[in-house]
Length: 417
Image (cartoon, rainbow, N blue to C red; front, side, top):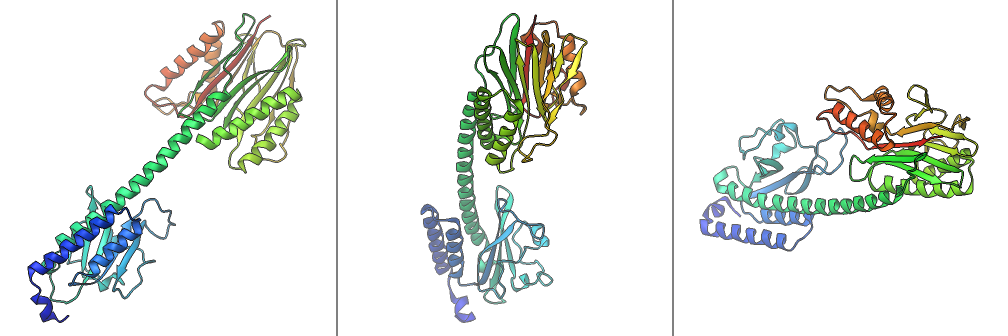
């Protein structure tokens, strides 16, 4: 088409082309075609435009992982260009432009110097795409190209793509929420429903998950008439995978506890189970305590967990630290030791997870183990349940308006003569 013929195109014919373009775009959107097909439809629409000789389109894609060498702007479509823009990173100078411009100096931005018009495409005041255009003839102006219409057409396409992305994210979020619901149900089944509450023997647990699904776990297992096992644990990670790993942990612990009271064997088997099931992606800190009422003795293993407090009275305190490292990291647990405590007949054992001691005040100070011990001592003579309640009151007062940073579990056992 000659320049003279181009100039002869009347306004009515141009409006017909624009109307046909708009209809094609709307049909494509209503047809629910994939994103890349929408970009392709857009490209063919501009290709049929008489005054445009070339174009390339860059779109912001926040969901795609990139290395440090590039930004998150990706080339989606183009035609008529001398360069292949698929692997060309959008220059930072372009990202500062938010209005239609024909005055951008592309001379120093090769290969973009083959274009003469830049159309930023907005959605909710944010630039989500950049459309580069080349004109068929040097004499053509912004008015000849009807850039406002091209921008409007571009906006329609980008908004349609954004809606598709949003719908996809909503489906992913719905699936994730369902996973959380299942994980929460699984977790609720793990925790013991009934704990002993007698005058001379009681077990009290307080559990506050930071999210719908936490990583803490506690258990009380009556092994036989004379022996019981206490366990408190904290799995790395949250959500569905952590809940499934903890359910396997609980099932294995309960099965092993009914087969043997050899605590070393139990812990070694649990370590192997975690390695096999998590593939090294998770680890668990845990504390295991078996008490024999008949012999008035106890054995315990601390596997990298916060040291529980053993109190015979408000002043006689022992921290239960012996054992090994975290479970799920080493095939063979290093320095595995089973600690024994004899002549244990009148005591309180108090277990907790780090969510309690790591809760911070508004000035950044953590609650810490010293304040926890102080709280247990201050409330030692109160009822077992009231001890937990008073400790949480103390923690809540300490943190002020700060949120709780993690799950919190308290598990304690009191045995009286």
